[in-house]
Length: 372
Image 1: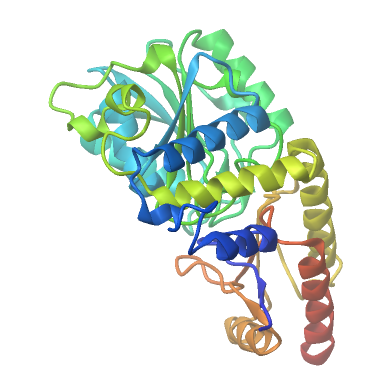
Image 2: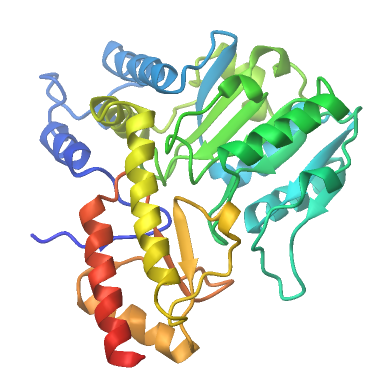
């Protein structure tokens, strides 16, 4: 079997070593005579799996003891409602909109309670290509929380470390004590992260963590127990924390695979080493785009181009469709841009090897030579 070069935005490629281990253990996990997804989530076997997964994640991200790690379900989209259900507490929340996913989060929260749009970078054509100037933002010192998405998967806009630090400092000065809530679905574990800056971090697993069906939530202890009256039991973070993410049957297989991914990341030297490889992949891909004489074009501002999701365009839509067709014939998958924006998108998550990016660069050079 020949595996394709997979640039899918999610569900995304998983490390080959992880898939191979999961295959080997599929029928018989550690000699118990059954696969890990076939046994009770409350039994000794799975309890060890989820405990080890949490311990490895805490090590990778240096998660402080006063934060709970929750392995939930419902995807990041459920978090758009679950966050305000748990944290609004009759107040108002600030939202920064820099792409499609933070926009969805803002609209969903407005269905739950009171929200305030701090800024939106959407242009007249429905595109997002930049981050707002921090000095232009006005924060509510009484906000229940401040919500942002640090990497926009569809539009390829990312808040890098320098921008994040300046934003955090501005919020701390203007609205001290207001917790930061971040959707990190498409770049969590791609680089080191200071968890202490945030009150809550959430991420769908299907990009850098594991299979779809699992949602990771890292929440500070003092934000538990604030759910509005009438919040369903299963959506109350406090209930999930008190039951070790097993208030109901969790996504056992997805948690198992996520645990294998965490060990894979540790074996690669941790997030600092992973980040260096990710930067090289992105730099080489953006260099090819910028050096194509305009045949390939990125609309995203240089200072906020995503390391994980690289959208770009060709001179004509029909040429983009041809690019997708020919790339698939050449052994690539997942390069078609999101349906809402079109174009091409290469998602280069942790599990996408440098060799895949090199193969894509060769294809892009050949395609440009034949069609420029």
